Image 1: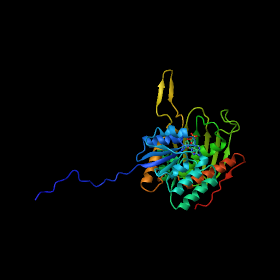
Image 2: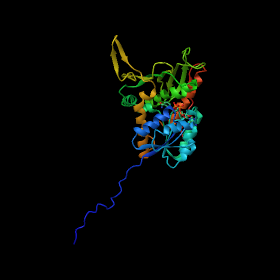
Image 3: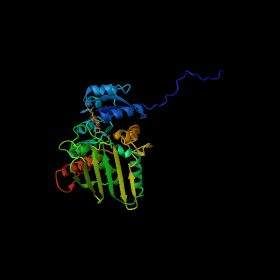
Image 4: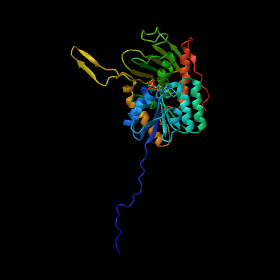
Length: 354
Ligand SMILES: NC(=O)c1ccc[n+]([C@@H]2O[C@H](COP(=O)([O-])OP(=O)(O)OC[C@H]3O[C@@H](n4cnc5c(N)ncnc54)[C@H](O)[C@@H]3O)[C@@H](O)[C@H]2O)c1
């Protein structure tokens, strides 16, 4: 009897090769194009499948950099597309509410750039939509939670290394901002990062905020305030200061200092990766031009963690902000904005968590 031979043409059991998560990107201006580049070149397990932008030519230009992607003419079409498993929203903040709710209703995980909305009611509408869905779909683009220095500071606080924190001092500086960057955007687009950092580090809400402004810098837009100084008081009485100055003309800088009962920790001091000593006795380094080089690794870590969370079915990475964080930050922004035109501290009104 012939011995059975191994037939090399026998079909082998199919090996499960995980398919890439197909991501649709809404809005491919500065931030969206940056996300398309990272999803295409650096993130494992994902690719950009569909792109849309209010300006179609912008969508076409960015799609040309993402092999295999196609352009559609509206966010609704993108969210409904069969070749979109997950959505990244990087349109301006006033569109986030409707686009995020559409993703929830389509049952698709979404990484929504901050802010969740430009007012507390709209943010709460997204909270309710997710609660109604019975699932968890929305991660919010507070990428600082994924920055190595932020994560190290958070872990030190959680381990009690600094004792009880009593004061946090934050500084947030941009070289310049786009034309039309109004006071509202100073609060909802910029200070919102520090407001989320309060949630992240202290895990307690802000109960009141006061915004004070010096005579505006000559670089501030006509009728707008820059810099702004915010004073936040949290539920247990901790104080957080935030100095926001978006027209420094120098570069991008984000610093955080935590004063605790057993020590002080500071992050964001070493903005220059290389320092130089040059002829003439000059010494120094360079400041990042904007947020992209400063937080490039954090954005990569954030998007990679999001893709992993989609792969494992949890949809939202452990460190990530979700809709409730988005609502709390929007409600705090509303009080900070109201404080621009009223005296003293303004209370933060928080609705019930569903
Ligand atoms: N996480 C961060 O650090 C960070 C940094 C910068 C910007 N952002 C956020 O990213 C978002 C986009 O900011 P940006 O700086 O890229 O702005 P941008 O103006 O450069 O880009 C926005 C793009 O969206 C398009 N667009 C406008 N309305 C749209 C709509 N209804 N649907 C689809 N596309 C639309 C515009 O044509 C533009 O191409 C904002 O929410 C902003 O706050 C986050």
